[in-house]
Image (cartoon, rainbow, N blue to C red; front, side, top):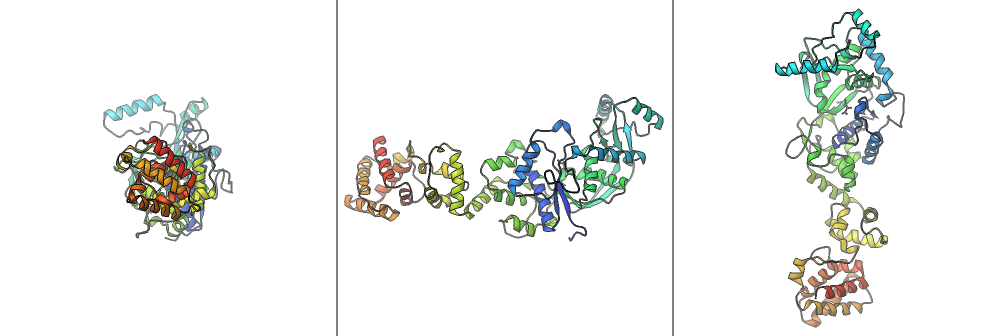
Length: 485
Ligand code: GLU
């Protein structure tokens, strides 16, 4: 599909605290679509529900988008000709547009109290009909309306939905969608606090901001006919719509906090790389149509199309995310990873120590194929950062027999003679010792690993010795022979 007008799309979150992974997907798809078509990506803050306002939420949101590399062209802090981009700064615009609808008889004042609305609702529930406004104020005499307004009576403004007929539109993802007007409510457009509802603000802003494609979550599909009716009332052309499939937990229920993290910042603080998150989120509903799984942002921009977004729910599979993280971590150079490791160490129990860049790069080289996250370096190989304080009891039982202490001392003496301490030198020294003692090399290798690392598994033993160095190796052997007597 080649759009006829310059593409303008928007991500329009309500700032309720943090960026949900579903929100990141919506933002990402809008961004990819815009960049693919050399269009404009707008960030609009939909903060018309004042009761849900959270301090700092907007900055938080922008920080998460920035981190992920989803950069907007117009929006808060990037004012352009279509601003302001925060709905609470556009109240006048919504009020003017509401008045236009009222003048044309397409909207009306409603004075029903919350108590009355509740009674109506209860009655409808008892009669087993779907709760909806009973349109009590739809045809109030003009004079009565103006008197009540003059008297300052509390009111809202509602849109007049036609009694009969239906609205049909072509969704880029869902195809032909038809919704009968009889199931639509006379939607509130302007609330009693003077703020617009989402439905009014979204239509007015999408029009004034010249949005060409509305790409958003499936939960808004059923509201779209109301929006299209409003476009018709205003005499405007509606944008194209693309409703993205739901995000599901692995048990196919709607993705929720109860089954795991949903905030982008949670993933970030758990040490996920942005490349992995972006690649993962891109695949929540979209796929390239072949076997490829690894995509950089540039490749996504090149390949992305809404036609390749599926209708069915996208399952959030954290194993896949972990796998992607390992892939992206492995693509980084030893040096890049060592910088991340340095940062990780700074925030860890090993923060007071100072490790040289060379030391850290050596660790990265030895461990990089064994980790999926930077924090794994600390969790899987803490012995690079401090001598073992405990020894794995299972390994002790299996590998540390009555002779082990004596053998280790003998080995330490051999190591002490070493002039060169490359891994080959440690290896040769161990072989010499085994030969001299007429024992199998394994009789030295296993207790040695236990002595220097406290465990029975890890990177190559001689790499480990070379990295921690001769003195530290000897010291660890001596303290193991003491503690494991
Ligand atoms: N403010 C809505 C939300 O929070 C935006 C829906 C839309 O994109 O139209 O999801």
